[in-house]
Image (cartoon, rainbow, N blue to C red; front, side, top):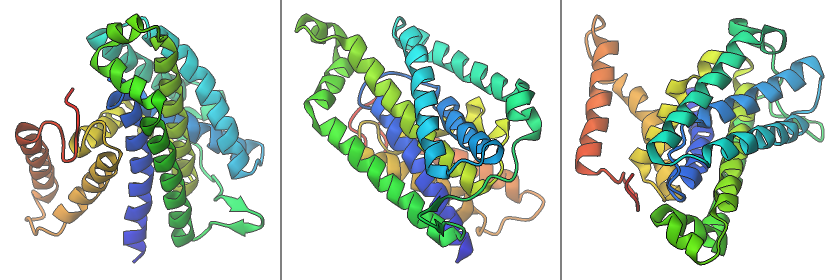
Amino acid sequence: MEYLIHLGILFAIYAILGVSLNLVVGYTGLPSMTHAAFYGMGAYATAILLTQFGLNFFLSVFFGLVITGIIGLFIGLVLSRLKSDYYALASFGFNIIVFSIFLNWQGLTRGPLGIPGISKPSLFGFEFSSNFSFLILALAVLLLTYFISKFIVSSSFGRVLKAIREDEQAVQVFGYNTLYYKLAIFIIGACLAAIAGSLFASYITFIDPSSFALMESIFILAIIILGGLANLRGAMLGALFLILLPEILRFVGFPDAVAAQMRQVIYGLILVGLMLYRPQGLLGEYKL
């Protein structure tokens, strides 16, 4: 049972990441590769504020949102000057820069040693110390993230985002300041990713830079491509699929000598097959 609860918590965290990235990539068409960086900012903000200043978890989440939002604004301003492949390459570079800061600013992040002893959340005297209670918290945050995102994409703001994705110049002709819309959704996505980072840090109780490397951004991008771009439920389905598939493959019964390698091969073949025959993802409404 504890094993299933653990998988449920991981699903909730990665579903938050998938939903938030889908706002940027799926609905707005911005090929961002910086999501793991914002995920890490939230995690490190919570870890540092909890271990060094003894702050409450929920206050640390708030400060993490503020810090991530400010940094996201500056990164978004730089990226907004770029288009298409150049946008993707620059966002790729920002992820590497942030990862390098996590790795080398040892006075703040402890570098490769990481930050241990991160406490669990507590609210009005109740501590989310058990995995089950933490699962309830993570699912509640996921539902809140989903409904906020649903409100955004269903609003007039969301319709402008979709129009920017299809033809930004046409939107500008009608008098819309597309820079404002792209910056706003980029910052919203970054802040939601930071919340997922705070949950991850408090759940694992230890973080180090390896959890927020470029491969993590690629994994989050794979979630929304697989589940479906421009579909919030697709992002959650993609998270569920990519969290459960490696675990299911553990029970296939491969010989011990090649079990790990065969699981990776089958995992990769399934993903490649889905991309060949269902390139818009399982529930997707848009293709990159």
